[in-house]
Length: 199
Image 1 (cartoon, one colour):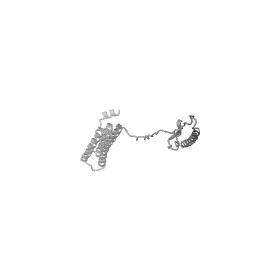
Image 2 (cartoon, helix red, strand yellow):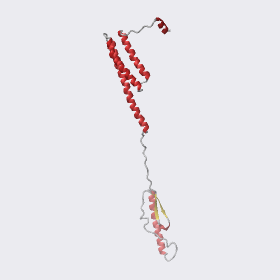
Image 3 (cartoon, helix red, strand yellow):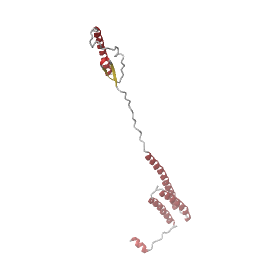
């Protein structure tokens, strides 16, 4: 705005100077001086239009004034792109999620089968009038548990040592129930072998 005010004041000053020059030129029209041939265009300053982008007003020879405007500069607004995973990383994430769900189902199935076997063995151990034939149903459950554990180990949902340890736990629990009811009598080692093992 200050620049526009300066331009308007300079235009008014130049207009008054142009008027004085024209009067002087008219009074001395008989003389052929170079100043009398100075041509003035009236209304130059009044016909100028100013904008906010005006930088300065410049006056040159022949009494012509023009306004030098700044070039129009278009600003480009760049927005930050949203963080997006690469295609390979997104694919790996999908694969990992799929494997996680699959492995979870396999491990859950193995735990469920083991739980059924342990509950059946606990009930059989607490039963006073249990018969040896009742262990057959438990053995079927143990076979299903072994199969579920082996499947989980095969797809690497469980470590092979973990699978072996769990199967061994079921076998030891079954043998403890059989020993409790007298259906299984562990073989006693001969004295010589017992001494060797103790040494």
